[in-house]
Length: 326
Image (cartoon, rainbow, N blue to C red; front, side):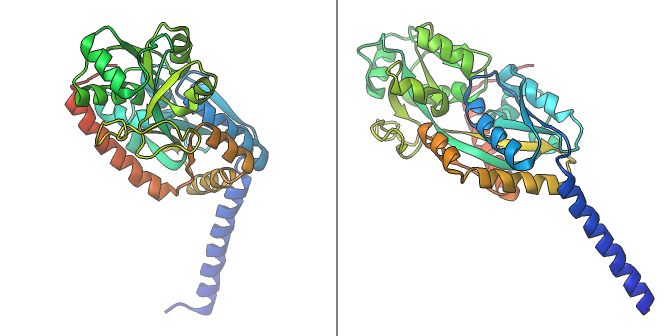
C-alpha cells in the first residue's frame, strides 16, 4: 500500500515527466527543418510541398527548407532521408511512387514502413492523360487507342522515372486496352514536362499539379482524368470510365513522413499544423487551381492508407511484369 509521501512523490514525478514532454513539443523546432523532396524541382511534389513549407515557416517560427534530391524514381532521396537523424529536423515528402517502389524494385536501401513514420497527406491529385497538340487527330482516349492500335510502337510516353505512377498508370492502361507504346523515363516530372511541351515526348499520364497550367494555356491537350470523378477545376475533362475504360482508377498523392524514431510530439504537431495550413484560403486556392483535394488526415489513417496503396500497386507491378534493379 502506498504511503501519502510515496503518492505525492509519484504524482510529482508524473507531472515533471508531462512537463518535460510539453517543453519538448514547445521547443521544437528550435532551428531550421529540412524537408527532402526526392524529385527534381518543378514537379508535382514541389507544387504542393513548397506552399506548405512556406506556411509552416511562418506558423512554426523556423524555416522549413526544401531540398531536392532526385533520382531513381524518388528512391535516392528516400534513402537519404531514411539515414537522417530521428530528431525532427529532417522530414521527407514522398508520393504514391514510394508505395509502388516497395514491390517494383528488387531491393531498396530502405523500407517505407520500417524506416519512416507517416505524418499526413498533403494533396490527392488525379493524373491526366495529356498529349502534344501536334497530334491533331487525337482528341479523346478513343482516338488515342485507335491510333496506338493502328501504329503499334509509334507513340511514346514519358514518365517521371521507372516505377513512378506516371509509368505504371500507362502500363495499366496498355494492359486494359491491348496497346503498345514506348516508355521514355525521366529523372522527374519537371524534366519530363520540358520535353513534353517541346514535342520530344508524345504524351503522358501526368499529375494534374504539373499539367494544369499547360492545359489552361493550350500547350497540352487533355484527354481524360484517371480519377473516378471529374475534377472541379476542369469539369469538361471526362474520366477514364466515361471514356470507356471501365474500372480504371489511379490517383497521385503527396505526403509527409518523419524518420522512424522521431519524437511523437513532433509527429502530432506537424500533422496539426499541416491540417491547419490546408484550410487557409490561399492554400485552398492553389490546390483548387491544380485540380487537387487537400489531405490533412491523421498519422493513423495515413498509415492504413499506405498499407492499402502498397497492396494495390503490388498487383499492378506483378501483372505488368516490371522489375527494377538499383
